[in-house]
Image (tube, rainbow, N blue to C red):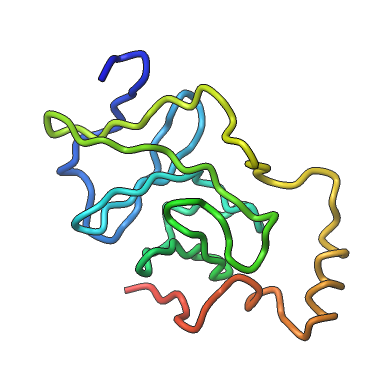
Amino acid sequence: MTPIDWIRVGDAAQWVKGRGRRVDLVGAPVAVFWDGTSWTAVDDTCPHMGASLADGRLFGSELQCSWHEWRYDRTTGQCPLRPWARLRVYEVRIDAGGVWLKSPRTTPSGWAGIRSGTSRRRDQVSYARFGLSQRSACSRETPFRRA
């Protein structure tokens, strides 16, 4: 592990099991989670409405946004029900008690991030067409609840 490829973002002891922390990685906000056995790091901004994902929760293999319950796969960053909603996923390593994230040098193939030039109105029409509310579009059965 070289300092050029990996950036230390904190001490592993600072993380609480199941909770996220927002860290800065080369000027970009990243949400980092520890579930007791594995680590997850994704872009901190939810593509839906810009909420901080560090405030979200882990549910098995998914990360749930605290604002509207949209969920994203922890390994791919993909929202299972909205193909355009995708997060960048960062590689995490624990070394010498520190949490290290791989430096983002290139944009992953297929990663679109937040769509540009699209209107919320068009999304609302799409939701209505399929009988869905915006709240249920990417959420699952388990609602987000603060402890």
